[in-house]
Image 1: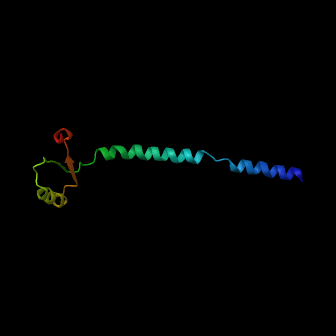
Image 2 (image 1 turned 90 degrees about the horizontal axis):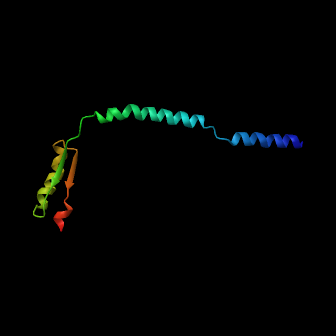
Image 3 (image 1 turned 135 degrees about the vertical axis):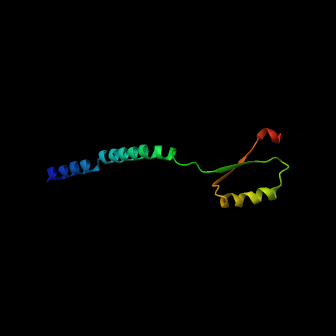
Length: 88
């Protein structure tokens, strides 16, 4: 009876080990997918964007009119250019 109990513990110890093969398979598939899709992303058409550079004399209402007009004109990205040296 002791032998059966000991054998049961050995079976439990073997069942508790994690098999690394499925994990490695998944990681290799992800690596291949990223390697295939990365060049496609680099050759995509660039999105039009606007970079707004304004000084302290710029009126806020003109900037506020630009922000909603940009998506209507097909411009996906609006960025603000800052100059830290100008604030000193």
